[in-house]
Length: 244
Image 1 (cartoon, one colour):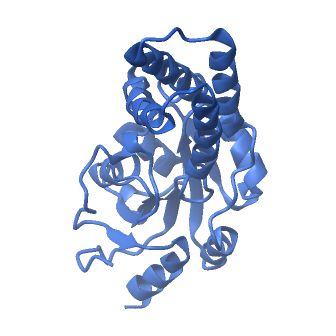
Image 2: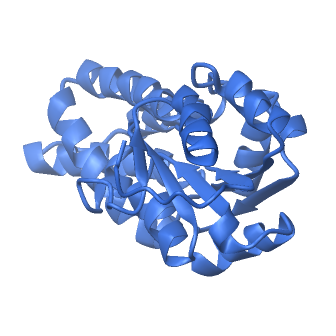
């Protein structure tokens, strides 16, 4: 844990959802594996397809944002580009199968991170206010929130297209606390930690898996935040800071 982490008492926590409270990246990996097998079955290099797809998916954020269109589109575009590279025609039926395989990422339930509910319950029991702030397609994210079974533990739930200083401060205000009394918890330095610190919050970075787009950020957690390996360690941080 970072020794520079502030000792200000935390009144409220704002949690990220994807890959902080529940595991979503593995859903994309499973769908990607299925699509890769289809591409390989069509006589093409599956490893090269995945390389193209991952690069294309990052670029497509500019066009599709975090909509459910982006990932399936990236998978199909990668197949089409690979066909051009090897000098063959892309087949509509293969492209359709790749798209359907990619779409399965949105159909499966995202499993909870280990001890996610117990951690939230422990924080609630100690009197902390809790909020959930997650970005992405509203329909998909609300589906994941409902499936998580964690909704009852949050005083505020917000699904937004992008996280920034203004959005984070708005959630803090809805908790009826000041920024310096709040702590952001997330696995992305880019989307969770850096904007939270800029907004005047404390922050806890969970060193968990993030997809390539979110890795376009500093490789190490800033000194202003605590870096933890698991979500379950958060109550220990709170206890250490409050009781000193």
